[in-house]
Image (tube, rainbow, N blue to C red; front, side, top):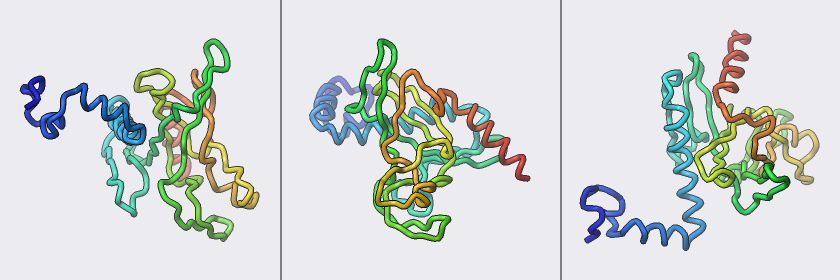
Length: 208
C-alpha cells in the first residue's frame, strides 16, 4: 500500500505500488527509460502548451504502430492540415560556447530503416527523414532550459544529409539525422510555431 497516493487511487503509482521517490529512482537508474518517457512527455506538453489553442482544430496523435500515418501529430490550422514531427535535444551533446550561448544536437530520423523512393527515381534503404515528409518540426529543449520549451522549424529549412554513401542528388531529398541547434534559438528555428504555420498556410493559399 502506497500511503502517499490515497487521494489518487487510479494513478500509475497506485497501480504499480510505487511511491514518487521510487518511480523517480527507477527512471534515474535507467537512461533509456528516461529518454522514452521524456519523448512522450514532450509530445503531451507540446499539445498542451501550443496546440490546445483555439486557432487549432483536429489535433491528432497517431499510434506509434500506425504504418500509414508516420508523423507524430496532425493539426488543422486556418483550414489546412499540417503534420508535425516531435524530436528531443540530446542532453549529452550540449556544450557551452559562450557565457550565454549553448549548442547541442537533436536526433532527426526515423525509428527504423525503410525503403524510400526519391524524386530522382532512385530507391534506397535509410533511416533519414525526407524533405516534405512532414511540415513542421518541434524540438524539445528541456535539456537547455530545464523547462518545456520548444524550437520549431519548417521541414524545408532543415539541413540535408551529408552522408557520403548517398549521391549528391539523393542528399537533396534527405534530412540530416543529427542537426545542431543553439540556445538562444537562431534561424531557421523559432520559439513560436504560429509564425511558421502562417507561412505554410500562406503558401497553401497561393497554390489554390
